[in-house]
Amino acid sequence: MRLLCWVFATLLLFSLASPGCGQYKGACDGYCAHLCAKRDEWTFSHTCGKMYCCIPPPKKGR
Image 1 (cartoon, rainbow, N blue to C red):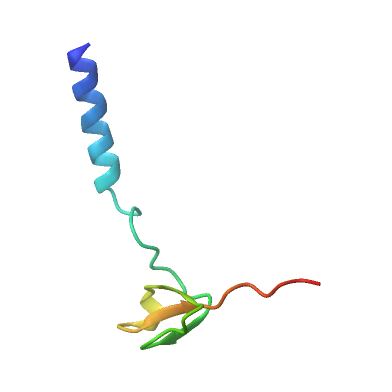
Image 2 (cartoon, rainbow, N blue to C red):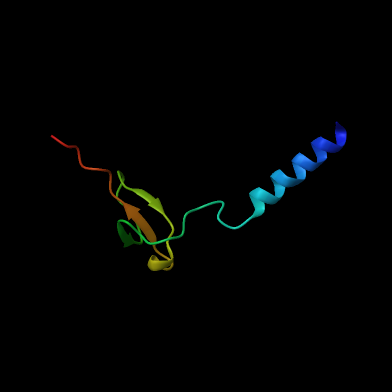
């Protein structure tokens, strides 16, 4: 049982350290800026370089 726990813990650590975990760095779905508006969500993107990728909140449908 102890060996099974070690194997599971090792696999879990390797899966967390693999590429693809963490922040999304794909194409920016919003706009690039040095500062985002208060209501915008921000993330990082390769297309924005050192600036933030600002994603405006979704528009409410009628």
